[in-house]
Image 1 (cartoon, rainbow, N blue to C red):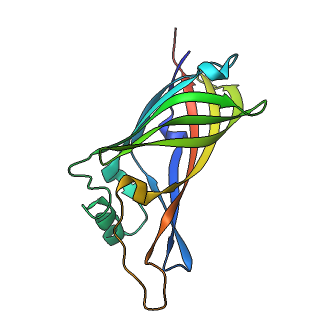
Image 2 (image 1 turned 60 degrees about the vertical axis):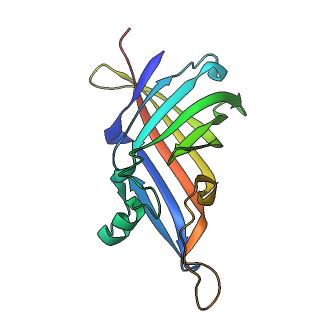
Length: 175
């Protein structure tokens, strides 16, 4: 069954260490996707998500401009970040590992998301919606995002590890 992302009730967020002492959180404001969700046989589910690289938002305009620059996402030359699933591995009644390929700056690498199915509901507007939470941790350097600065006290300005958290509400499409 075909489903689309309900953008108003979804979030693609991330967290990265800063100065080795704090965590900066951000999100992407623009994304879309298509999911073939098979509730009876989750292993047959497929996912395709496209994220606008220039929609990154950490609530700091100067930092966001740097993240959009060639030092990081190079959004002007690589406007889309994409995730395409390759397989689903069921791990429990409402949990699974979603394996796929994440492409950033034309570098495609395998990624595994830990996913929880939160259930389905009929909305007051007559649609059927389904909710999912997913998370993973990435090493940004594997996608060529290597910019950094050493700190006088040791360590680096920006952590290599990026924690990704996704909340998606999907709307079933009419047959």
